[in-house]
Image (cartoon, rainbow, N blue to C red; front, side, top):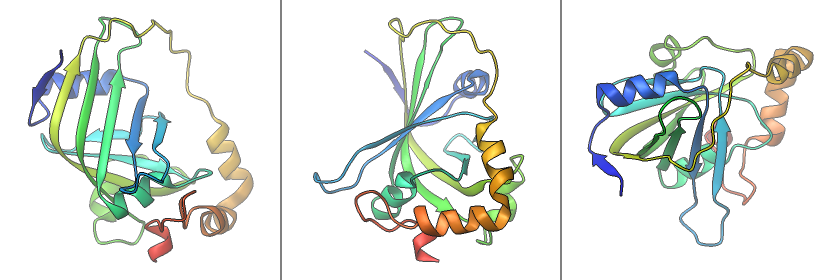
Length: 183
């Protein structure tokens, strides 16, 4: 059985900072919509306080996370130890999207190196933290980051990325609006 706390402790932050990858999960309120579970990397996650986290989100083929948290706020992050001692850490919270130009953008973007393909920053206020054993998670060796997103963005250019966001990131696969669709 896992251990729970109501805030991110220093040991949790240390563990998070060592991970090369995390997962983010969201779902619409309706039982009809699709659950979203996305892997993330690229040194994109930050612990802002004991109750708040954020990650820089690059432009992708869908924008389910933004749509789901716009609808209901629910978000879960999961970090797994793929090397070293086994451990799984989950952060449960209420999230929201911050877009370039929003009032919070300047403050939050300073925590990240901003890639050309930046789409938004996802912020979450955390109300529960869970750790569990992770005994069944396999061991992997990290050999580096993929550069495909950077190459794709360079090829598209800023105008091409903006057009792609307008074409592909304004609504979820279930037709829910995203923060980009609310601009």
